[in-house]
Image (tube, rainbow, N blue to C red; front, side, top):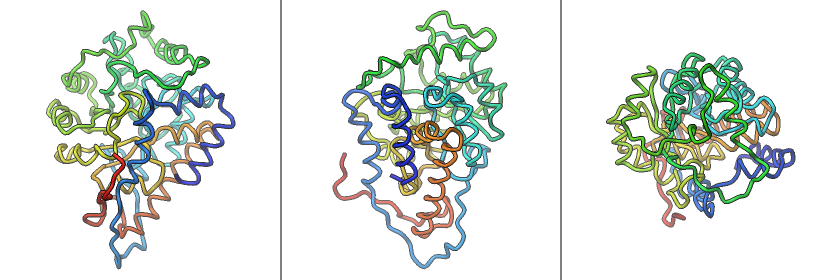
Length: 350
């Protein structure tokens, strides 16, 4: 783990109530996938290229029209208001200051409009297909009006995974229902109405794209056949994700699913999250074919430690680390990686 991220995680643990820290840190089941996500990036070795001019390294990328300082985005994680009073507004400000992009969670603890006003940079909106479809569409329409430039449809949560850690002092419904009720016509009829609709299929991708006029990425893809189905249905991008180990426990680590999804994507952007804690992890992901990565928990720890400044520091540390290891690998940019840079170790953990 990068030293800055480690220090921020330790600082967050010192200021957050234990229940809140466990709410963010925990996974589902026996937390096998949670633990495997981080370890799996170490299951790959790097083959650097030498005697290449790496005197100037540029980590910048353009992704779905957004110019970013590095291929490192902020993953959609719920309820940042538990970590800092300004919640997702502070996260958005910190992400923009670092030249990054926040995917705003549908379970934001701050109204979408407040988040949007806190950043001059691009941002995306995570869309859940709720059981009350009208409520889903109204929430997405708010995001579109506020300036979201893409939608991220979460596909791996037909039901919420049972978490391993007990957090009786955390009431997520009190925060996210307040946000859902903050716009015109958005008062939920019941808690059940905001739960994910377990009957949705890939047809939802095209419906959202047509109705809201934004590119739709699908989050939660771990298999080639699902990648192909989503792309055929109109997905503009894929997010290889197991929900940070918070849904199906023993789901394959994202590092091990990435190459299969990239091969099936046929050039459609493929992003990945799950356990990324250093620039070297990012480099491995890029070498496996990822267009960009997303980080979740490290950003929350930075937010808890020092608000927007902590978020910026976390993302800058990862970007600077990536620039360093790109040069050591013999690359001048994320698009200039030596052929065959990444290969599996002989004895992977999974």
